[in-house]
Amino acid sequence: MTGGHSPAHQMLYVEVPSGTAIVAGDVAYRVDVNVKQQVPMGYFVSLEDTMAALGRVARDGDHVLPSHDSAIYERYPDGIA
Image (cartoon, rainbow, N blue to C red):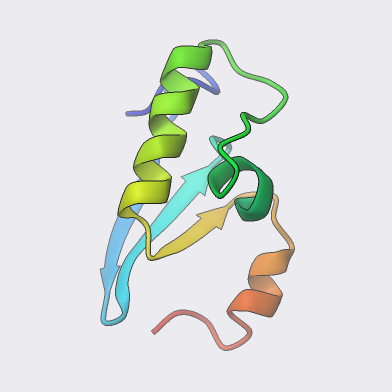
């Protein structure tokens, strides 16, 4: 559980042949801003939990899949293998 965005927010880690994919849900709306620059999204209930979760995503994820980032279709046009 990550907290941050909402009290019971969760992320899903999936091991794939090319590394760890993280389905980040709403802890990050966009990889380029929220994950790479560590800028929190606009709505959260705990900034401390949100920043901790963004740090885990940046550290642990080889592939990050936020719920609202249309760039993932360009980044992974054939899916993740």
